[in-house]
Amino acid sequence: MNMKKVISTFVVVALMTFGIFQGSFAQDSTNTANTEAVSEAATEGESDNVSNDTKEAEPELSFVQVLKQKYIEGDPFWMAPVLICLIIGLALAIERVVYLNLATINTQKFLDQVEAALKSGGVEEAKEICRNTRGPIASIFYQGLDRSNEGLEMVEKSVVAYGGVQMGQLEKGLSWISLFIALAPMLGFLGTVIGMIFAFDQIVKDGQVSPTTVADGIKVALLTTVFGLIVAIILQIFYNYIVSKIDGLVNEMEDASISLIDMLLKNK
Image (cartoon, rainbow, N blue to C red; front, side, top):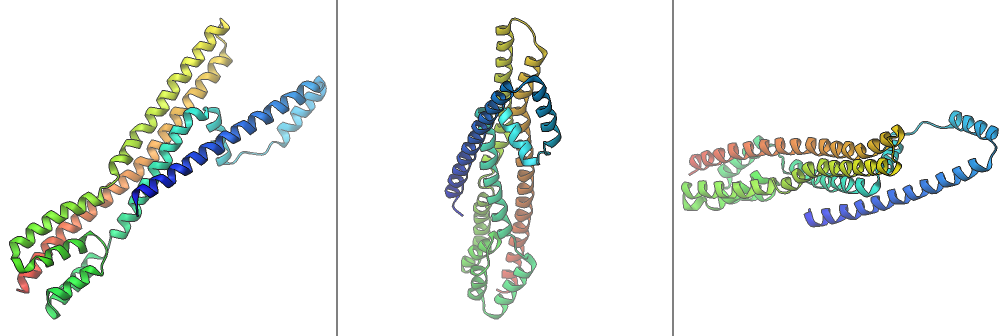
């Protein structure tokens, strides 16, 4: 899987999502303006009846609709970077999860096949088994078997060197995921601080401390922090799963490397 293509695809999705939310925000604003115009044209008694009927007929919002509403309330300009962090971070995390799951094999079954091939057909047949098996363990075995005619010491050096290469492949993209884990809350805090500044500017402009103004401003400001923390929690769960998966594969690689040396000693 090409990492650049994955990132590019999800960046496009992020921008499209941002555009959809912006369009929804504009549509909601238009609907709100129309509703206010109708309310002003109605009489006071009729307005009360319409308001009561609306409250009774108003359906419960779904989870997605609530998220969309809170996204709009938090100001899409500041919420969009947090959303982009989530999308790109999830893209990288899912790519790693798929890669690591494909790299996981039945190690014991593979060792038995290689040992049987060494006994029946020699090194070439064992190399063929490695070529037809996916994953870092098979790749390390192939490199070791390819140097088997140069002695066990060279096999061991080759296994250690190529094992480091495979570890780098397994850990590819982890630094970017950790970046988005740290970046999402920071962007949320930034939106919160700026929102608080706007709230205090409104207080100075009004010349008095209005509970409604302060409460609304603080609520909107804190929404960016909430979304940033949610994004960080989601990505952190994926990150910990990926790290544990890599640790398991590295342990299997080390155990399998020792088994390869033992096989070559037995089948000299």
